[in-house]
Length: 392
Ligand code: 13P
Image (cartoon, rainbow, N blue to C red; front, side, top):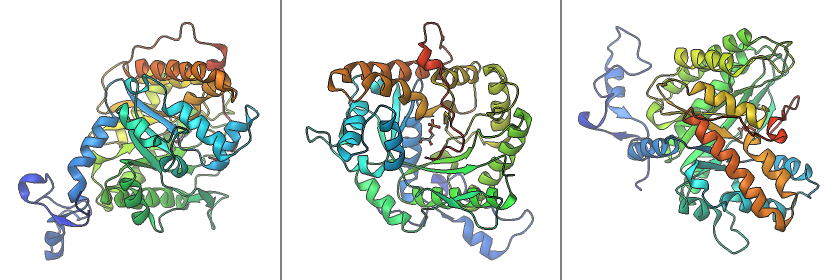
């Protein structure tokens, strides 16, 4: 693949040529803006980016997110009494990625850097396990959250320094999409500063990813924490996504080559009333239709502490009528919880654990198609996983 940088496209290959650029003000026609519209970013990868995004957003499939940092993977392992060693992380990820038949329901998997460069105990690259099943390998590229000075106890996401060279390396290793998760807290405001910083960081990351052949997943997670109503979440989500799209456009990100990973619009975890899946679907789709252009190929929700069954039911409710985008899942907790319980770190339980993963993947695949039924779901699948102040 040719190196990606600023390239000139001819008029026939670009729908933007000859049009006003995103950041040109109406009515202005300076020579510098005319020069700007003939230059499009991410040119040499653009077709591949569109193709990758389409493959991930394919009917009846979604993303298996297993990109926990080593510290967070340690929390998963601790929940079944295992030490946080490289061998245990490898055994766990190997179990997940070698599940027979997984590719029928899963189109992409987000990995942590350790897994992207890791092999199974039999010496097969983890990325090859995925590719064999037509699952696109992805990579978490952000470097985590730190306090945002000058804000109301909020955070910002690090990782832009050196991102271009890291992304090129990840591409060479087989990754074709990327993830950057930043968070917005409703109880903390959110402050205008925190929202702007979150949106700008996501946009810079998205531009750099596309420049290096990786489809960026844009994830401003609006945390479940708080006792606010669903209307407050709607208002905040609209504010956040309008700012995200403003800066994505300003950074000349190609919308056909991105995927979104939003939180569903729900009441805060401590709100007195819970919302049913139909209400959550109505609010979430209202927000997305107001803010997300139809050029975006896929919306891949996070589960954010919902129970496995809730996350599946909500997705099912959102797919009861056609949407402008593929509406699917990119769950971590809501796909892994029953797997861990079935596995318990024992080799003799690997098959049962893989079966548990397939059960959840299939349920979410059906929900993506709007055909899921919760009949026969286990008690474990109904257990919420929300943890106050959860960090990844
Ligand atoms: P959850 O589904 O656990 O909220 O995962 C979110 C995430 O960003 C993982 O990639």
